[in-house]
Amino acid sequence: MEDWKVILHNSISTADQLADQDYIFTQPDSIRDVCKKYPMRINQYYLNLIKEHGSPLLLQAVPDIKELKDHVCLDDPLAEERLSKTANLVHKYPDRVLFLVSSRCAMYCRYCTRKRMVGTKQMQITPETISRGIEYIQDTPAVREVLLSGGDPLLLEDEELDSILSRLHRIEHVEVIRIGTKVPCTLPMRITPKLVNILKKYHPLYINTHFNHPAELTDEARKACNLLADGGIPLGCQTVLLRNINDDAQTLKALFLGLLKMRVKPYYLFQCDLTRGTNHFRTSTRSGISIMRQLIGTISGMAIPTYALDAPHGKGKIPLTPQYIRNFGKELEFDNYLGELCLYPEELDY
Ligand SMILES: *Cc1c(COP(=O)(O)O)cnc(C)c1O
Ligand code: SF4
Image (cartoon, rainbow, N blue to C red; front, side, top):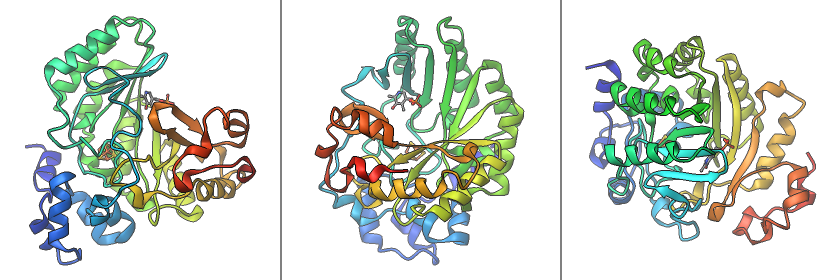
């Protein structure tokens, strides 16, 4: 078995296994309750990072009873199910589709937008759903770009991934393939030379990875990103703004500058979605805007992502910049967003 499979196989996925880790203090009963609804997976690589760095990483991975006490947020805030054209394929923007090809991840992030289904039986991905998705793309010439996500596409077997990529690459109007994956952060040893040799065949292929904290920028992660970048794959990062994890300018500055040094361009900083079970992670947009104001002009523009919010009910991604809010704020009914998500133009002077 390859290294990454062994590490994954030895993951912690039950309350009892977690209770055996004497450096993680939890109440097994509440963990057990949470795991019935939202699965846990903490692999040995990320577990060691938690051991070393504590709370900002622990909060991302270890279940919290607050997940079951969220009565504010929505199961499917981005209305992905309503916007699905065929199972697991969301065609929301004119020229690109989001294609979910894997239901599993190397770790189950507690703040996941697709928490309602990722890692559970709710998410049914089969060779048939994949073939139907590919047929839809084939039959829809407006689709210029295919964004593979899940779950994590890089948890597929090499051969499965190769087959999906080759079928997409063959479609003439598909100009670009993009993969969203968290494995460079949570299981960097999954990025093997063999995998890179497969990915390289399908250029132009982009990868957006997902790091949230500078402690995740380890030697292993650097090695994984180097392999991908040396394979000619441009790398971006989608970070989520998370309360008590990375919601301060110093932490994000270290993260974005560290990513840039690893040849990863910070792409988006997302306001945490209104996903049920994640309300305790959400910051106010005011705090995100204040952080952006502290970073812009201070560090290289190359290290600055777009701060954006994926609006509830499938209204799409909205860059949280002063100009955009001033021009479109009324139309987007910002005032109607829940609680502290409310935004007012005068808060946006950055
Ligand atoms: C985020 C997203 C995309 C990609 O949007 P970009 O702004 O191009 O990164 C495409 N489709 C869906 C449904 C999305 O949520
Ligand atoms: S890796 Fe992505 S899809 Fe998987 S649990 Fe984390 S946020 Fe969700």
